[in-house]
Length: 359
Image (cartoon, rainbow, N blue to C red):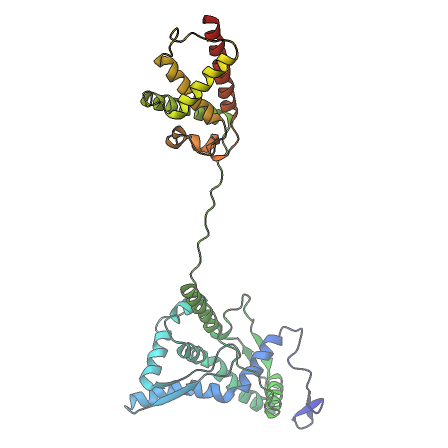
């Protein structure tokens, strides 16, 4: 920009820093008017394609329109050739039922291709920019005829419907429209152009399609659920200990007749310890009864359930309740298990003393 001002007409000049009027309520609408005036030729052809399609279709003549989307840094340029019948069908699909909300418009356009979506968006708001181009001509005529002229600019929903707070319409006088037209012509002459805004619903549909494609290509990996240790109260441990004791008693009754080698070695060690203490017994005077053997097996299994062992005992495998509180999995013994262990050890010591006294 070489100068600070440009001539609107006659002696009236325009400051180049005036538009868009920053910090005012007309700032957004100023930018929209300048943007659409820059692409007047493209928009006029797009709007005229529908009129020509209807005219040639009624006359039974061939007609085709090559749509080339405007340049945009967000989307690549798309091209598609439309016949008169296709243009009429696209127009009817968007206008047969009235669209009241942005959600309805988005749902209506979901089944179209990218070229169709862009073409329909600019074709649907043709009334906005064609009336704007007509308002520029009407403003010039009214200004030179010294008549009052005002035009209200309402941004179209098809282009700016994605905004959380919609752009409010603003009223422009004839001189303001002439200034905007002169300023836009000056920018085009110096090759200072701004791309047309991408239709908001097209951008939203493309984001949804891209997200769906990423979900199909890279499905989400399910996170492994880590088992949270179950904490039990003292009363729950008491109930668990009783249930484990009943299961152990049943298991001991079933295995009463099966005394393994480990149990026999422990019995021999006990006899040797008793002999070392001076309580020697003459062979054949006293025999271990079946009831004492069962009691010894029960006491041993109860002791094993209350102490740490590298391998779980058969009773701990079959008892499902013991897996949460017993020490076969490296968990500290509960208060009920410690009490059970002490009571069993006292019973064993008392029985050994009673056997010495009886002998």
